[in-house]
Length: 328
Length: 266
Image 1 (cartoon, each protein chain N blue to C red):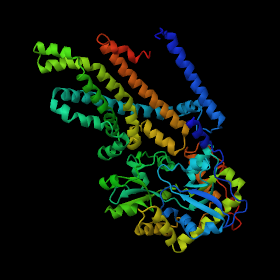
Image 2 (spheres, rainbow over the protein chains, first blue to last red):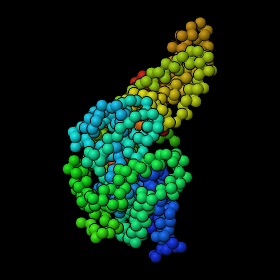
Image 3 (cartoon, each protein chain N blue to C red):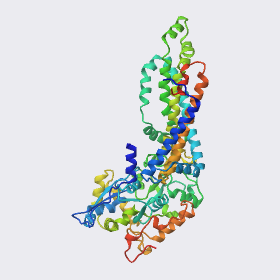
Image 4 (tube, rainbow over the protein chains, first blue to last red):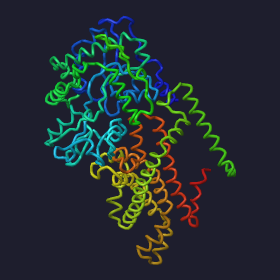
């Protein structure tokens, strides 16, 4: 019986989603954001918006849930235990392929911060050179199939343990990383490292926020408020003083030292991961339908997506319609 | 209440209950309108099995190899250590408690350590399958070596049998049913150990293994795939235990009347 009750919860029998029709700062709408990892500077804009009261001003009472290797974010969104969660565009496309009713509503990162971390003296100079090499990564992620098929190479993937010991112990070890993260810690431990950025291979999905389709349809006003306040938070985090977000992140995750947080934010700022390149029409939060289409077509051409999943099934530009931009 | 059970019943009842369980599965899925990514229907699991048959066959082979290596080592070394413990009183008093203690170590914690020692691949996976089966084999076999009827031991001593004669001609033969109980536990656990091992130490180069495939299906949200891989784990475990029971039957047919209990649930 307990199992059946459990499944009923999984099916999502009305959870989050109800709230005032016209929320105000005094009568806010409660919103849950599930992040993809423990609190870290890569989530800075959301913490900045929370700490500086941007959500509250927008009539939202936002709770940020930390993620981790077992966050089960999409299950939380599907079962309405969270309104919003984060992931890469390629994964959200996979969700659509599995008939999960979610749509991406804004970007957090314009460019993919994923990379492959090597020791500085490793002979491999490009991703192509990794043919046959052992790489610690999250098995099943789209970038693996992408680089294997694009370059006609084979990687020997071993499961990621989200640690650093094996890299530090083995001078030929290679692992998947975020450019904003592992290089800092490895260098702190005395390793000289190099990163092959996945975005240079052409695999460059947005990182963004998604929610249930029916939530976006039922309460577009709430999604709009959340997107606007989050973009405000991110802009302030990148252009202004990140101290409020840093304080909130460090309070939740004591491993986050000021030195690391400054490093990660520098990467976000200098590599234009959040703001993108304005000359290419990129901006904080922006999702360009053309880029989405191009990514989908390339994943399809490489056989990673079995069909050309319609854009509308995983993405909407509805909440980013400033500057006269319209989703096509 | 010892009614004779016909072979027809041995086939009919499992089929009836199996059909009932599958009906319940469909009913739950239908009642709560559960999508495939939450609970795939049995036919969707079979479809995943068909679509993924190439990779899953390779993975099942890798898992079988890891399990078999670990299981063989667990049985071989476990039996050897049991003999030593039975032969030397010091070992029995000093070491045996630790053997019992080691059974309590959660394999998932050991797996994380072993992969840092042995690196990813078959050695790690087999080592984990070995560790999970080794201690049950020793515990059961030692118990068997010490549960020889006193009268038989007295008889051996009366005829001035040497200690090695007592061990190999009396204790070892009469411990065999216990040994096979341990081996049966090790066979069940070998597949579990191997799959756990692959979640930490799988690698595409060695066909991944079923545990590794479960990771892949998890990150590509392929729930029917996870179910299909799990089904194969069960089948593999079943084959392992079946083989051990068959060996037991072949070896002990003439000796022990405890034999039929594994096959006859009544």
